[in-house]
Image (cartoon, rainbow, N blue to C red):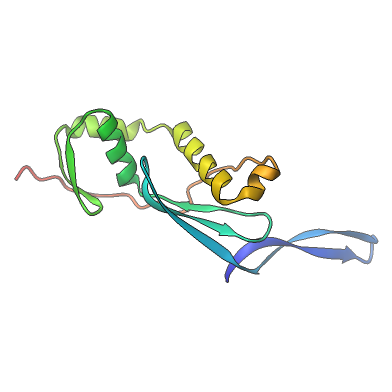
Length: 142
């Protein structure tokens, strides 16, 4: 049980109208963990109450590693860190030009897969970054 945005039925006695009022409450959440070919290890957090505000966690290092592999650039990683990259300038260029549209399409796939009601309502999510950690890795020659 975690806090989430939701709606509560509300009757306004002065106007006589009944409607759904935005509220905060605790609801059950499901966590779906995945290992994606492009994004690596991550998870989708799905609340069980409307408006089904999804949270998706991914690691940018895995996304960059996937893009480096597709570009034919050689690299090695230890856990979550690059310990060698053959062409650092190319890696920076790839990182600077990662397709946001391509990432959004992948997030939409996760939404359709792990939150079926999303597809039933024919909804589209607005994706935004809730938390970001910027790596300050230092690459040494030796």
